[in-house]
Image (cartoon, rainbow, N blue to C red; front, side, top):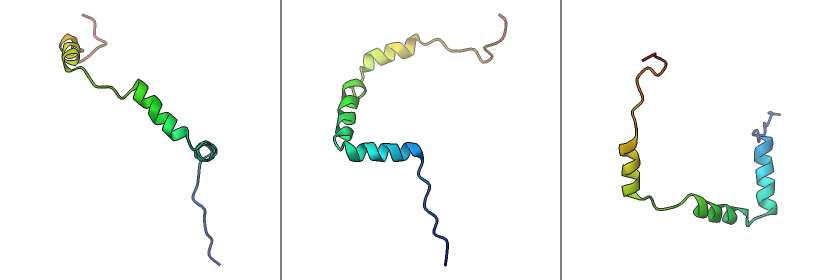
Length: 65
């Protein structure tokens, strides 16, 4: 009789699977929250201003000037 190994499932993965099965609306809430906080159009002019204001780091930052 061959040994049938079960694939390992971490405790964190089991917790998330149980949470999602108990609260099926959770994934939709996560996507809504992401849309509020992260998924925004970027301002290209502002971004180019940030890039032009950046000061390059020296190759060896621990040297004494």
